[in-house]
Amino acid sequence: MLPVLVVIPASFTSSSFVRVPPIAYSTRWYSAFIADPEWIQALFTSISVAVFTTVVATVIGTLAAIGLEQSSPKLRALALGLIISPLVVPVIMISVALYYVMRPFGLHGTQTGLVLAHTLLALPFVVINVGLSLRTVDPNCRRAAAALGADPWYSFRTVTLPLIAPGLAGAAAFAFVTSFDEVVLSIFLSGVQSKTLPVKIWEAMRIEFTPVTAVASALLLVLTFIMFATVEVMRDHANRAGDQ
Image (cartoon, rainbow, N blue to C red; front, side, top):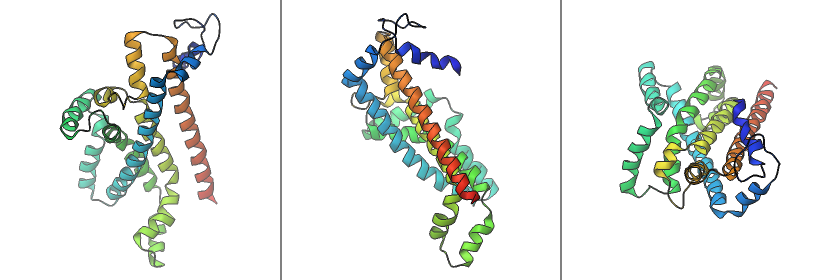
């Protein structure tokens, strides 16, 4: 993974082309990035789509994981196979299929369409992470809550949810990063007003490969690192709370 870090020094070059290591360091390309409304709009579009994708995928994935945990082995195997199929099917095939499905409904080129498409890709990570956390929950905890008069929703909110919080945090992080970094599917479904940062980087590299693309890549890398670092802190806090 170390070669990925090369975009960070490349983003601080003073030259008009990418050179590693830079001859001289400067923040001119960060200023150019901030001054360009297209780059800023692409950045905020990526963040917005990733946040909504995280929320939708986490909610649906958690419900699916709970349903799978209570299903019969045959039904669980069939449903899980369908849910994780986006990890097996090439993204280019999914992109073409979603393009033809969404276009008649007017979802092509909209943030709503991107959120739905990214949710499809993020859902397997949520189901897997939450499912693993559910397996660590002692069934006697839920039985004790039911014996004390708690209804299923209250039992889930006060017993199950705190116990699977670390898994939920990891699932949310994977969902966010999956959406934030996705480029192939976004190329097919994005429009003028819904262009994500990876799509903008791809378009810029096709026309003119300037260090401003390194700036955008560095921001993707840093935001991804911050996301996972935050999740690790949250998971550590949740684990400590669970131990207490």
